[in-house]
Length: 268
Ligand SMILES: Cc1cc2nc3c(=O)[nH]c(=O)nc-3n(C[C@H](O)[C@H](O)[C@H](O)COP(=O)(O)O)c2cc1C
Figure 1: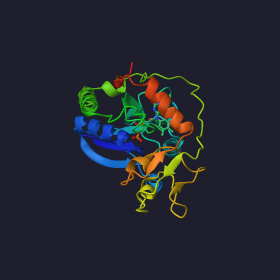
Figure 2: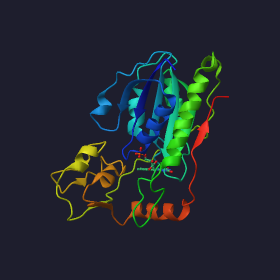
Figure 3: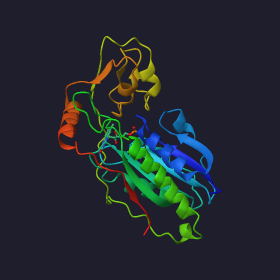
């Protein structure tokens, strides 16, 4: 492939980023810019404007069967692309991805992209805990190998004359109208005495919700429940406290223990 490859990732706990990297490796095209839109400062950049022959990978998690609203807000502001091929990828924590992939496909289409391949990969569930593990360690090596193969398959299609222009609509699971978005608002993080105020939690929060002046507790109105601060804490001082989120962890652990496999989608 001669074109440039750009990536757009929203990835508070890193799994979407890992999968985007594997697909990039398989595609083997010239590197364009990475737009990691996870942090507030990074979401200020809006200069992605690929050419028609370039390609963009969009990779982000499923939150309650939809895309995280923050990522959607950024996507809605994308400059209109000239029919640039898009690879739409969602991660999910081994429950379901419901309407997140169709939402991603539809959103990038409205911004002038042409979705030409889609995939849903499994990532360790953000609510996974030691007591209630859910999809621990995903994406694992086999998942990432499938990501590399997916990239190679796309590159092979891309090299076929007129494949992109002849490709029909990318068919993915999900339906419109999408599931309702339920903005989560709950005080669910406990900070133990092991916290040494290093401030890592502040630096990884996608919404500036960790209050350094108040024991590094998240500000409930801002917190999106992504658990980036819990997973990044070098002292393991942060945890999900008993309550509605831990109840979800328990239910997921009981009901979603059979490992799912990544799935792939192509145009009609
Ligand atoms: C608020 C919230 C809601 C989630 N909803 C779902 C869901 O509906 N289905 C599912 O399988 N996983 C769900 N997950 C798990 C994430 O999709 C999964 O952990 C993903 O790998 C996280 O991506 P990241 O590591 O790139 O941040 C949810 C996670 C969070 C934080």
